[in-house]
Length: 386
Image (tube, rainbow, N blue to C red; front, side, top):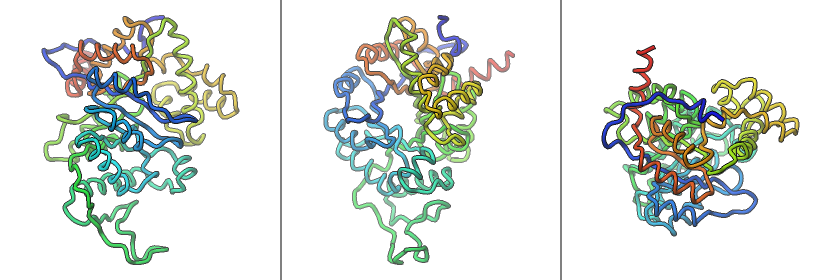
């Protein structure tokens, strides 16, 4: 197998110092039974990892496990990747993240938000899909007002209005603006799980970071200009300084790369084939955008017809390789170079292997991340050369 045929990124001149790649450990959400890999979480903390990240779908929630993890750790930041905004009003989300942050000693929680998809929003939470971009914008603006604690919170948004309008159906007419009793961390960071241009720009405009959906080492060429547009909308000189780009990478130390890929393909087939409606599945759309339109259509057709094993086998190797590091330590070390030059400021590692956690810590120390500005500059130089 040729190493990383789809991930080759031109060499970037390196300067002394550089930026340490912030590593996170992804613990996801539960299966049928809830369990947290506390041994791996504590190992990551000892090795200097920056954060641990939870998630939610329609099993365990994202925020409660962080309270447990906070009680057993001292330094790790505590991130959600992601909390579904339909699952809680923005005021409750603000209360939850500030509560856990206070219990954890302050300055540790990262509120990662996302809209999920219409099947979960309407089928699980009983909320209208509506206009998700505007709901997300309203949601973040309300949370920021709550964090600032400058006065009772009111908001006249396109999707969310506070207080609930007195003339709206079912209203008592008694709603009034309120101010958070708890004195919060006003700088608690918010990130968006974003895949398209609009939400990527929104992350740069309103937030302190982004969780780019299915980011690959070559994704900066696409998302970088969108992020710069968002900074311009924010004004005030906002830019790359302090802004986090947290990519996710699956890591497995193994002598059998094909077996590791086959396992990952089953997960990809679930999302590309069945996580969303046939007409609206952004995981499927991502595969299309990555250049695998025929494969995306075939996977969805097979999965929805109940042929899940065939759907998994239809996932192309090249698509898996975009966001994974599988193989020997040498092969993973080679693949990691592209991530260091990708523009990501952090890598959220998906693995259950202690040795893989240790290896990624060594690689992050050996090879600093160049950061988004240098990555975009390198992309521009390669364009000029062509």
